[in-house]
Amino acid sequence: MSPNPVDEAQAFLERHPDIVSIDLLISDLNGVLRGKRIPRDNLEKVYRDGVNLPASVFALDIHGNTVEETGLGLDSGDGDRVCHPVPGTLMPSPWLRDGQQAQLLMTMAEPDGTPFFADPRQVLDRVLERFRRAGLTPVVAVELEFYLVDRQRDDLGMIQPPLSPSSGERATQSQLYSINELDEYADFLEEIHSAAATQELPLDTALKECAPGQFEINLIHSDDALAACDSAVLLKRLIKGVALKHGFEATFMAKPYGSEAGSGTHVHISLLDEDGRNVFSDEDGDHLGTPELQRAVAGLLETMPASMGLLAPNLNSFKRFQPGLYVPMAPTWGYDNRSVAVRIPSGDNRARRIEHRVAGADVNPYLLMATLLAAIDHGLHRHLTPPPAITGNAYDQVTPSLTNSWRQALDLLERDEILAEALGPDFLRVFVANRRVERDQTMQSISKLEYDWYLRHV
Image (cartoon, rainbow, N blue to C red):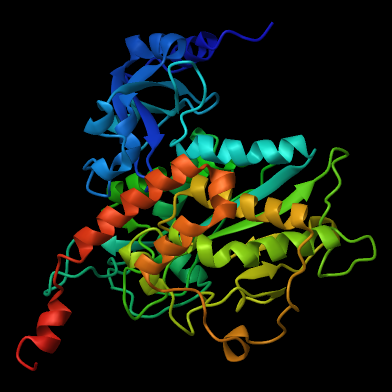
């Protein structure tokens, strides 16, 4: 007999008598966590009956406004759906309210209990079903880059790196892999690791990235892709919350500074068969892997142009794609090569895997993973063959071809039959409609740079 789901709530409340309220969280299309806050006395009811949220939570733009063009707003009556707890995600939020706050991830269902088509978590689960039917288990790891910025803006109202907690000085250099800078922000980073341990998030390494105030935190690989993305979504919330507590702001914008490196979300993927064997690992130790690995790479490369609308989901996303800043500009692959889009890392042959390096830090982790796994599934089933692997600097050898136009990215995505079939045509229609309206809004805004360049001179 399966355990009663209410048991999880009861056990949690017994272990945490100081918790007074719980945030019920669900990820929208942008990866923004929406939801409700409930008192602890209502938690068991949520586990038993779920909680209602409008389907239009997946029609919200970055401002939290309903995009009616999605068809999920007033045209459909803006009706409710039931959201149910994601088992294992009920955890304290120790950085909030002196440890009196907790959180719980939710996922949305139709009235008949079937998954709601526009919930990004359910989109990923739908893609994972293809692998379950094939007897394959993706093993994935997510790497998140982000910036810390000062809560005080500069004299022009722009963001700036924070003052070092130890020296009081503002960083101006990149200092990639600097241990000294990790020491300077040790209290912040240690609280992240402590809070992550409390929430059972599988953190791996932290490192100083290549711009002032930029860091990277990695999650340990998991053979549960849904749980891995749950962890990525919750880690973003944790980092932002702990940063505020320490007097900073953390941002996952893809390109917060025009002249500095952007922030990405890198994903590592391997596949296990039913016997637990890594199907990407070649018995003879070929560092380019097995035919299955190469077919997976070919699928990723073939679908990469159309996937840009998902991997670069907003206006700022496309400013990250600039030469010379370790951002892929074309569908390329290679072994132990950080100038390509799909990298085969070096190391133990038994851990042979793919690293996808295209998406920005602003991507929705569920949609990123669903897109990559759909592409891998396509390559495997079509027995695709990739072009030759790149050796050396890919930027010098391959002309940039990935679009840096938000409009063109959405056009390519809207026309793509492979991703529509895998992610669901109804979902893709909602996603593209949501992004098109937000893009139209950006066209109504005139930047300071445009006034500086054109107001007096044209």
